[in-house]
Image (cartoon, rainbow over all chains, first blue to last red; front, side, top):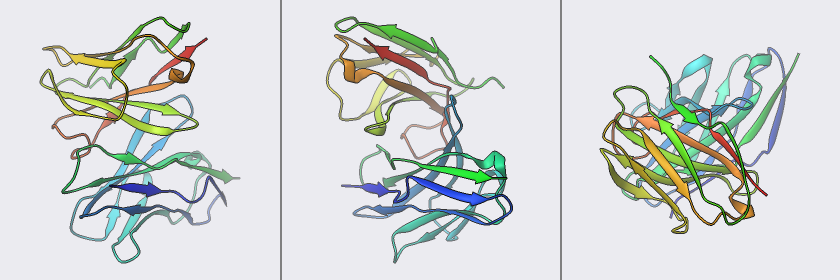
Length: 114
Length: 115
């Protein structure tokens, strides 16, 4: 079975400060990992994914994520937060050798204060 | 290139009724996946279609069904609606089969309210 956890329902950060949104996962094999963002009344937008290769993945809008196999984590980061980054962020996982069905985290609300 | 479109955007139904939601994928995309998003359960995978064939199915009752047409447009049907079916239903399209093997592009969703 596969699962993903986003331990924080909400993250608050001041504009200009670095931000981190946490994600941990559990799979029986190797993971495919994804981050999506959802703005109010909108669908999800793809940010980045890890399939294989370099553990540091760079994505859209200046976001990046680091795959850490030993800690089974895939935290989303950005060096300098913008007010416009305020949104709901979802981490998703799929077991490479398992089902094609992805499992999403419950989401983390990121609030960037001016 | 136009994005994924979903119709209608908002829908109100009563218990026991049935509903059909529509999704038009990005031009050239042959994979369409459906998700249900609720505050309680989060985002859950419903099913995926590729070239008119259902490829994957999530853990939902048989009241939830779907189909895909030759032009890749997809419809999702929910019969005998229950209050718990109230949710945002999201559609995503992609170029390849396999719900998460490729980058998916999501539509804005259909907000279904069951009274």
